[in-house]
Image (cartoon, rainbow, N blue to C red; front, side, top):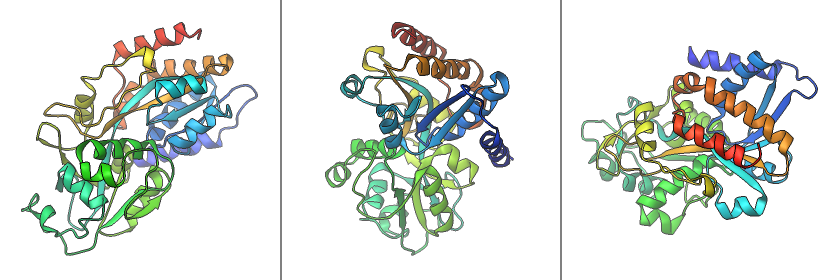
Length: 333
């Protein structure tokens, strides 16, 4: 039902004609695309202003706002304070979610397959290449795992989802750090690439015995099995609204750093280890566009929490929303 509703909202949003001077253009991360699209549909219905958001990946979002070809960019990899200064950009978080490993293994449902950080890193390195490898079966003695080759699916584009995922692997695995490292794009040791969260989702759906990583809303909407992970406190946790919220609970956001912060490998028994925020980027020299963009995001902060929760994203705490409003005001917006 949610899949049908989201598809209808996206279709209607794309079909509705824009009026002169009433379109706000954004581009970037596919991680928040489901919630931004839902917000945009409701915003146009309530205020008559169309928000045209292109899901092109975080790398594309940073590039387009840096080139001043959109009104706002979006990235799941926070831009460093030094780069914000160099590019003349402002940055603030808009939503919190989780990146989840997804698998297509016959008979394995969501949350059933357990992996540690080290074992998952070795799978994505190609060091573990069958599902019945002893390193996997030792963690899953009650599962019947096939003697089948593992197909790794990763992003082919510059991606904030990849940045969050590889940042996590780098923090938890020295082997991964030395072989591939972290970033929006990395040199993948093995696997096939899909464009956007959409592309990875479609590959994992089609390819038997595959594993990939996507924002959680894509896994839920496409009924893909996600993996339980062992977190920093040693607990196996499943991806959920509560585990994402637990990961974000101890976050310390700082205005003067442009809210630059990673949420991966957060402490807490209930914390999901691959949580992340999605950030909005504005050009300092575009005050008119910026006022339109913050009007939309302020509306979303006031009216969009329930829609975000329905799509398994975590809305920002009210205290953080208020701090962001002060940040806008301090920058003349």
